[in-house]
Length: 155
Image (cartoon, rainbow, N blue to C red):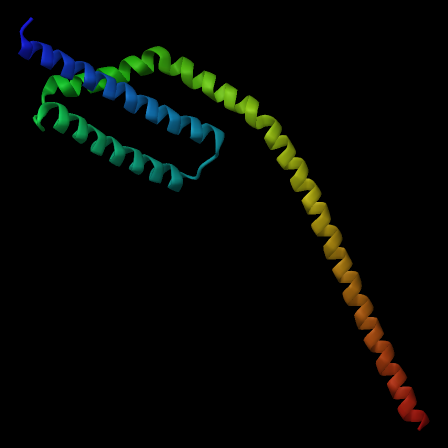
């Protein structure tokens, strides 16, 4: 095999791995989305960030590996890498990671709900205490006014 063909094959393998890397990055983003509920605005912002990162990353890979010359087989290798990852280990790893994170986060969510319930009870209790205090202050002021008006009448 000639030196030139070896370099081209190596470039193909590196771009294939770049496609796998980008698919893994997107799977991490998908895992985060399954764990933490996002609004469509934030999902769009994440996608914009991902695609900007993807563009810069691919530009860097192609520029450093092939002096900026875009070759069709490099683009095919990137796509093939992403597809092979998604068809093979991608589905299994995504489901495994989501299940693992849910097992870790389920107890945390339960405790969060319990703590939130207790916090709301404390807020409710403090709120009732404040209302009771305000009512007592109002009654005390009314009593003071009645006493002062009786004293004025007696004098």
